[in-house]
Amino acid sequence: METILRRELIHSKEVSRLIGITFFVLATCFGAFVRIPLPGTPVPFTLQTFFVLLSGAVLKAYYGSLTQFIYCFLGVIGLPVFSNAGAGFLYLLGPTGGYLLGFILAAFLVGRGIKSTKTTKEIFFIMVLADLLILTLGTLWLWSFFKLPIGKAMISGFLIFLPSDIIKAACASIVYQRIRKRTDKIFN
Image (cartoon, rainbow, N blue to C red; front, top):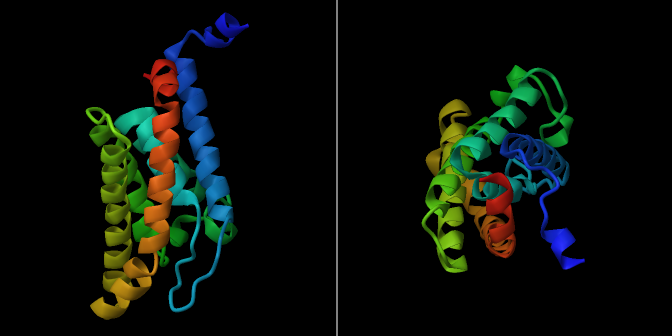
């Protein structure tokens, strides 16, 4: 029975990657619907960053960032995949636009950084850096496009999310470390 479980069902890496990309696009979509409004910020808490970080780790830089680009593209063309079932190009100009751009870059950063890491601590560190990139871009977006004072933008766009995002990064790094050997064989 164990040898059956070790066999690949799909021998094509391209097909495996397509399945992985599809899974993480859908997971990011579903993560947007786990939405908790927070006081003092127009940006809700979601589970998206967990899947963004994991997509970069599992699919690596190119395919992880492609996954997040496809997610954003689907929202821009009108599918209600963004938080609060939002969609359309104008959604990108809303309060979460900087975070969405950060998703693409963060998945790329995780995918690049994860190549040479071995320990869960190193993976966690890379994921926290990538998450800080998302939060920084989101905060800068709130400050520049919504003309929030920098202090208010820091509080409502960065600091309020920091504890939960560190927890999501920790969870993503633990999950990835446990599935790493298998996913590296499947996708890379």
